[in-house]
Length: 251
Image (cartoon, rainbow, N blue to C red; front, top):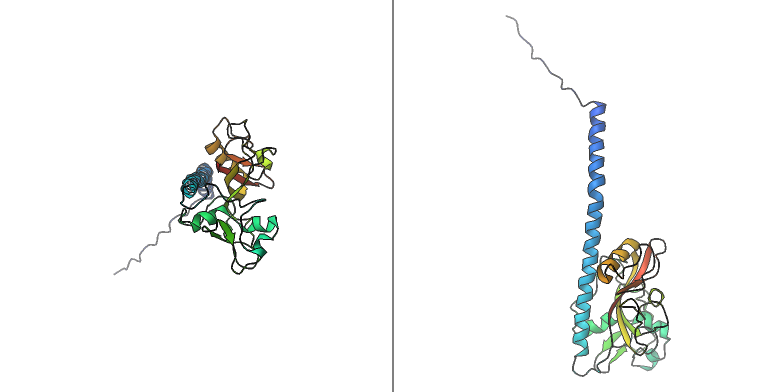
């Protein structure tokens, strides 16, 4: 009796041409879908900033209405930053500007629930330098440090809210938040205190899309150039990034 050995069938592999066609199709799909994915992520970052700006505006209105306040915003940049304590008050304006933030005031008074955190711009969330941080004392309407000392902390590389005296002599792209042409033509009043959101090291495309969303088409800049009109101001990007200043309010 003959025994029939089983036959083994070898499946034929893919040809080189078939592999090339598959890779070509995958490359086309990636080329079509990847930019849309980046656009969706960028739009999400823009909308997060828009929502944060609305939250900050509401917080500022609530702060101005606080009992015991003086109906004004404390300056956190430039000259005239309110401080208490001989050593702190005697420190340089630059040192106090680097250490003080308007969002600190809003957090201390319960107007903000949590620290600012955006996916746009720098992802640095901590100050540099040594020593204690400034805190806000609503009872004396001033920044304090315990124990009293000159500030050595620096928040200038962190996304934050600030307030300073308006400076209408500067174009918005060079004013560092001190001036905005909200209607495209009119400077801020020189006697006003302006509050603004700072987004350091913002990618150029993100800055442009934010300007398009918040300024509107009529006041939006050309891509890659400075933004001098509307709610969003920034200098022309350098090495693909720029510091963005978003208007909150002025009083």
